[in-house]
Image 1 (cartoon, helix red, strand yellow):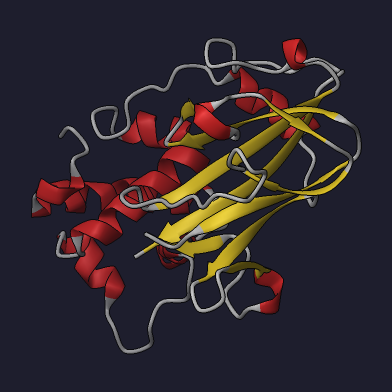
Image 2 (cartoon, one colour):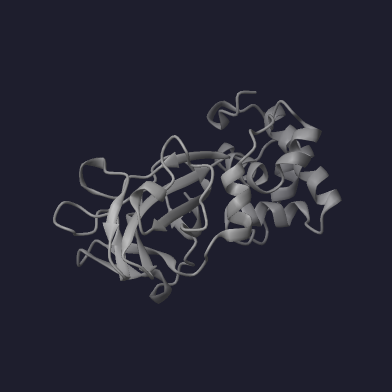
Length: 239
């Protein structure tokens, strides 16, 4: 299939189960655990998700989430089991680099409270930091250690995309030391971001350097040198 889960047949969804089963057989995960990781929450008691999944009766949006999670976390096994459902991904050099050099904990997600028009730290709200709903407005909070420049990217299903941070779609943005909200408009005020369509795991990277020429660009988002600090946060978007 072409991985268009909006039109996936029962056979397509049953095939996805066999891939999940193969991953479960080669890891310490159960199929149920894979589903929970993909959905971002525990399975509801009393619902026979496993039988529905095995028979191909699982909902298409849920199948899309499972496929996205497997593609991100177990691409090699999935490709070996079903190369049509999980075609070989191009080598992700930057992703490999981030595995060893990414900085965690200084880039956070903030949600916009429509009632007061301000942003609030999600740690003060009941939803975990890494989970947002489709259509929910958010921005980034970066604890920046230097005066310099930033650029941002997001990765979804193995593909990297630039994420403009400045007014007029500017890729690189001047930034000062301290906590800074991103992206911003021409008045320096935070602008909202939203994800409307793509469920599942997204990885966001904000790269910081003292010189804009050192930042990764839309044509060279594959490697950051030692002078670039790469701040990473993963977000799962749910219905």
